Amino acid sequence: MADAPSAGDKAPAFNLADHTDTKVRLSSFKGRKVLVYFYPKADTPGCTTQACELRDISDDIGDTVVLGISPDAPAKLAKFRDKHDLGFTLLSDPDHAVADAYGVWGEKSMYGKKYFGIIRSAFLVDESGKISHAWPKISPKDTPKNLLKALAEG
Image (cartoon, rainbow, N blue to C red; front, side, top):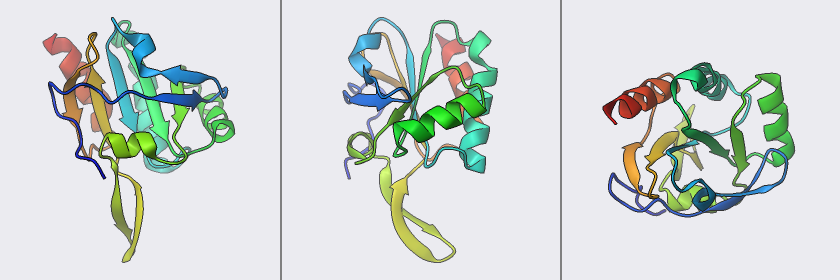
């Protein structure tokens, strides 16, 4: 597992299938701020809270792009997006290569059982493709709050 990028680092590039199975590159958003957030699994309670709260602040973030990344297949992402009327792009990282590049694929524990999965994290990428803010191990409810605070700072 790679170390998570920090503020000032170049954001790791990616080219992933979205919820419509269309490839999306981070570099295609150069000139705009991009929230890249990683979540464990579509349509689970915490992930739904996080996604819906990001949806609910969409009018307050200007032209900032929101990209949610999970290991889920595009068809599952499409169902999740439609069910909750998310309005932003969800990306599929089934082999967790992008999660590895961002340092968010790691060992987790639930009910005493250890396994590997996504460590919920978020990164704000600036207009030039550098990380301006990094929020490792973020809670679902803090994601929109931190984004709004970071955007207000300029």
